[in-house]
Amino acid sequence: MSGRDLFCPPRRIRRGAALTLVFASVLATGAATGSFGASDQKSSSQGARTATVGSAGSAGRQEDVTDAAAEAMADGKSPVEAAERAVSRSGDRWGAVYSPGEYEEFEEALDGLYTGVGLAARRERDGRIAVARVRDGSPADAAGIRQGDRLRSVDGERVDGRPVTEVVSLLRGDATDAAAGTAVSLGLERGTRAWTETVRRARLSTESVTVRELAGDVTVIKVAAFTKGSGELVRDAVTRAPSGARIVLDLRGNSGGLVSEAVTAASAFLDGGLVATYDVRGEQRALHAEPGGDTSRPLVALVDGGTMSAAELLTGALQDRGRALVVGSRTFGKGSVQMPSRLADGSVAELTVGHYRTPFGRTVDGSGISPDLEVEEGVLERAETVLSGLGDPT
Image (cartoon, rainbow, N blue to C red; front, side, top):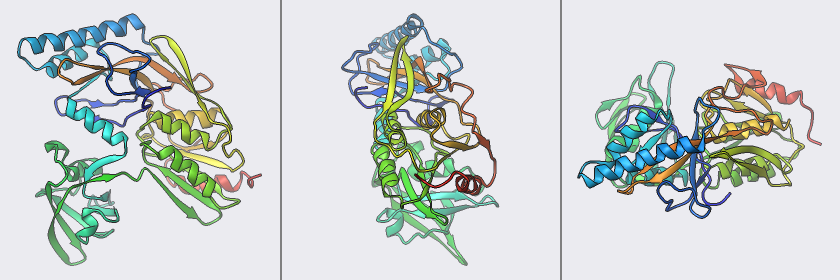
């Protein structure tokens, strides 16, 4: 595959009410409107209900969308709004339209970049929001914010009881397209002290892969998203794992990312062979792991309803190839292929053109991947128990 291969996490388009779930197989810059050439290929995929998408139907939908946008622009109207109406009428459940700025932001996110203050939040049992982690060298770190501090408000908006995703959106300034350097006021609490801290957002890189060692020779590799370079980080973590260590690959909450990185991650555990197949307008293609992966260490993959797209592709490959025991709950079920088309004003419309399958030919759309061992609570602890019964690395 050429170009930038990606699946992307869900994000909310401000003009539309639906979550856009994009899952791209190939993304290169400068795709021609309505085309899918060998040199300038772009595609994305996400969960759709249909099993196949005919090329004539998808081509027709693309023409409808691009024509509607061009006509609107010629009449002095918004081409983006016209394209959104055409996508809605097409019946494509996962069709989406991005403004030029939104699409640029989307691509930057897949490169592992974001605008924020450098703190991770978690929701406590009582609904309060606490600081889960502070990134070294970030604005939050420079302001003296610590792990465990309570986050009470963001720019005057109370955050107690809100989903963590909404809190993160406030911190990043998604609603106002806040740029690096913009100020954000944080209401904080530590013990009996309550105060307000004003920090300035900065361009930061995501920590897509984290590694920790547990007692009993267990290495946990957590992959939050398949951003640029994450596949090599997984391979490096496997290589650096202590001799005799068993591995937990934690894909819970992983909403996708670059498919090339997911394939690289698969190469850490497989000695070559098929990772997935997919079709684009009826043309069948395949993804293969590189040879030389570690096939001896016992491996458990953790999944849940937030495991999507590229993470499901990796899970399906490890499960079908008999390389990992999958523990947790059923994955999201997002695996259709889309093609982006550049509209007259530089915005981008994405429409479904195909689907991907696991090595055994299983489709993921709508059904997700069922774990080998279904566990709702204490998932990591159960994984450790399972690993203890899988024997030692050979």
